[in-house]
Amino acid sequence: MSDLNVGVVGLGWVAGAHIETFKSVRGARVTAVCSRRELQETALQAQYGIPLKAYRSLDAMLADPNIHIVDICTPHPMHAREAVAAARAGKHLIIEKPLCLTYTDALAIRDAIRLAGVSACVCFEARFSKHFSLIHSVVGEGLLGDLHYGEVDYYHGIGPWYKQYEWNLKKDFGGSSLLTAGCHALDGLLMFMNAEVEEVVTYSSQSKNPVFQPYEYKTSTVTILKFKGGPIGKVASIVDCLQPYYFHIHLVGSLGSLLDNRIYSEKLKGMSKERWSTLETALVDSGDVKDHPYQPQFQAFIDSIGKKEPMPLTNFDVAFESHRVVFAADISAHEGRPVKMSELSQ
Image (cartoon, rainbow, N blue to C red; front, side, top):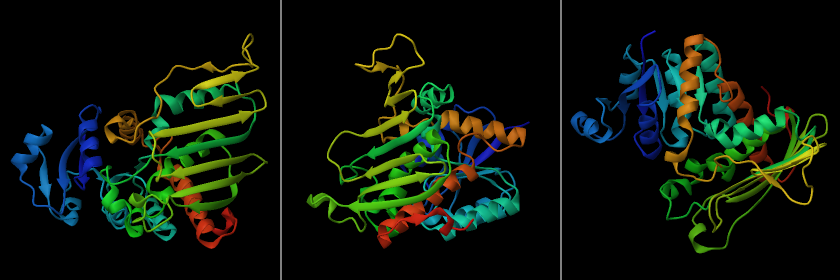
């Protein structure tokens, strides 16, 4: 099979990381970009080191039969319209998180993808990190036994020192603390617990530091999740903290516990319960997109297209369910009540 051609929509910070990543992906290459800005193809080639066709119109890019995959890297509120249009044009999709800002839009994207029969990858790339892969193996090997509690928390202060601050603080762009960033943590918890969510309740707060006051939504949320069969979990999404980036993971089971990259397990004879044993791995410890594990994710996506099967870990249906829980959590925070997942029809 010849290489699949990728057209990147949007040309900001994340798009640059995607373009660089595809240089190391077998079976696909970025050949075009689409931006509202006036782009010179010679300047693009000088910047990215590869020839790139420039489009000012998404419709024009979608009409190009030589574009096989559309990679959506635009601001959050644009994702739904662009994803639906790309699916209807028969293009496979890569969609940066969040999918969109409303559950109605998520349903529209899902329906368009199903109707068109195209493949989609959603950028919950942390699932492809060494850290998440290690934890998934630990849980899968039964080293923790049956999980009855898990917490995955996202701490990342997004203030004026951070590139996305100016648009992130607007509700119609950032959406919520979970949608704009903490969804990575919630998605991680769902991956590790591997159980259906029945109900969520979310509480919210906000820092009094002046740099976070322009935010149009609460910047700190805590979500409590009830899973089918009895397990419970917690996700904190804190984008108004003043501290180093921290992705906190704590899983508790019938045979042991895991804390970030440390473990105690009664299945491993000779361990001391008085102190943690360290599992050496590369932690998820940066919000910088150049440090994100896009390469194994995109490679898995391209391989899955060749096999004509859904990609592992971050196919659309998996990501849709994570977003459904996020939307339920945001409803809970807004209305001040627990929300049953059955309230968000599928």
